[in-house]
Image (cartoon, rainbow, N blue to C red; front, side):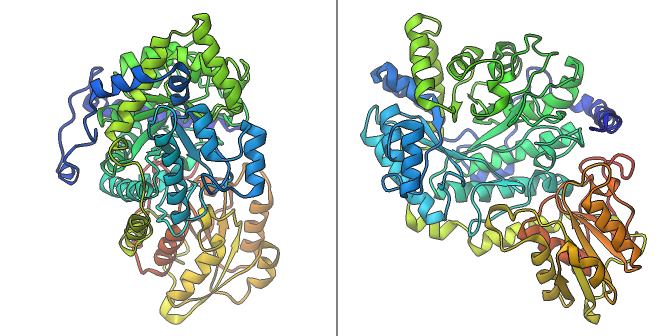
Length: 606
C-alpha cells in the first residue's frame, strides 16, 4: 500500500520551499528572458532560426487535407533501415500499418515525424541511426508535400535512454538535482543534443518538468530533478537552453505535472489530488520556467486533474488544461505534443478513433504514436469532413509544427552525415564531461561506521552484491559488476557475487557493498539480504542504485550512498567516493521520509 503519510510529508516540505521562494517567482505574465553569457555559444538564442511565416503559410496552403493531417502525427516504425528492414520488422510494419518499410509509412500517411524506440529496432548504433534518419528524410523530401520530418526519441538519460553506447550517457535528472548545478545540467543537455542532432534526431522528449513529491510514484521518481519546484524550474530551464542551443527541440513534460501520482499512466489513469493553489505552488513553476526559456514543445500528461478540470477527462484531452492553462495562462505558443496515445491512461474513457480528435479539440498539435495509425488518420479526416474539426484548426497546428522545424533548421539541412557522427557522438571530450558531471552527484547519506572511504592503498577485499537491474542503454555490464571493476581499478580487490552466494561469501571481507533497486515497503528479498548480511558482522555499505528512498525501507547500514542511476558514469563516481578518490558532493534533491531531509548529504569529514 502507498505510504500516504510520507506523501503528505513531502507535499508539506515542498510547499514550504515553494512558499519561501514565492517572492522571487515570476509574475503570471512572466518577464522577458535576460540573455546569458552562454547565448554567445548560440547567436540565434534558444529560439533558434527565425521562421519565415509567410513561406511556411504558403507551404501549408499547397498541402492537401490528407497531407496536413499527416503532419500532425508522429508514429513509431519498425526496423533499423528506412527501406530495408529485417524480415520480422517488415512483418510488424505490415501488421500495424499495411506497409513494409518505414519509408512507405512516411509516404503513405504524409507523416510529420517518426519516434525512435530501441524495441522497434531503430537505435542499434549511431551510424545506423544516422542512416535511418537520412533515408526517412529522403523519402519525406521527395514525396507528398516535401516537408522534412521531425525525428524524435526519449533520451532523458539516467533511467530512460533509447540510445546507448557508444553515445555519451549522462546522469539522469535526479542525479543532476543532487549536484544542484544549472551549468552542469545545461552542459549535459548541450552535449546530448549535439549527439542527437548528429544522428538526425531533432526533438528530444526531455527534460522532465514534474516535481516528484511522492515516494510511491511508480513512473516519475528519479526522472524528476527533485521535490523543490524552484530548483526543478532552474534545471528545466537550463536543459531547455542546452538542448535548443545544440539545435534540438526540447520537450518539457508531463503537463500539468505527473509528480504526485500513484498510478503509472502507461497502465492506468492516474488522478492528481492537488488543489489549484497547490498546483500553482508545486507543479506550475517548472513549466512556466520552460516557457520563459523558449521551449519548443511541451508534452501533455494522461492524468485526471479535478482541480483544473472536473470533467474527468485526462489532461491530454482537456481544453481547460491545454488551451485554458498552458496556452492562455502560461502564454505558450509552441508545439503541444501528446504523450504516447497507445498508453492506457488516455484510452480508458474514449476509443482510439476519438482520442486524436479530442486531443486536437483540446489544443494539442502533435499526436504521438497512436496505437492504430490508419484508424487515427481516418478519424481526423472524418472529423474535418463532418465539421467537428475545421480545416483552419488543423492548419493552426500544422503551422506551429512547421515553425518548429524551421527554427531547428530542418528546411535548410535535414540529412545527417556519417562524418559528423564520427566527429561528435561518444567522443572522448563528451565522455570526460559525463564523468565530471557525475562526480558531483553521488550523495553520501550515512557513514556512522566510518567505513567510507576504504583504504584502497591497502588493497582491501570487498564483496559487491545486490540487485542487478537491466543495464540502461547498453552500458558495459550489470551495476554490481561495473562497480566491482571500478573499485578494483582504484586499488581494491573487489568481487561481484549473486545475492544467493553473498551471505556465505561475506566473512573475510573488509566490507560488503549491497546494491539496492526500488526497495518496496515491507518485507522482501532485498530487505532479507541486507538483514542477513548485517548478521555476518561484516560492515555493510548500502548503494541505492535508483530511488534514494531505499534506506528508509531497510535496516541502517555502516554507510549509505545514493547514485540515482546505475550507468557506468554513476558507478565510476560511486567507486571514487567509496575509495576517497573523490569527495561526495551530492545533496538529496528530495527528502527521504523518516530518515533524511531535503538537502541532506555528508562530506567525508562529517
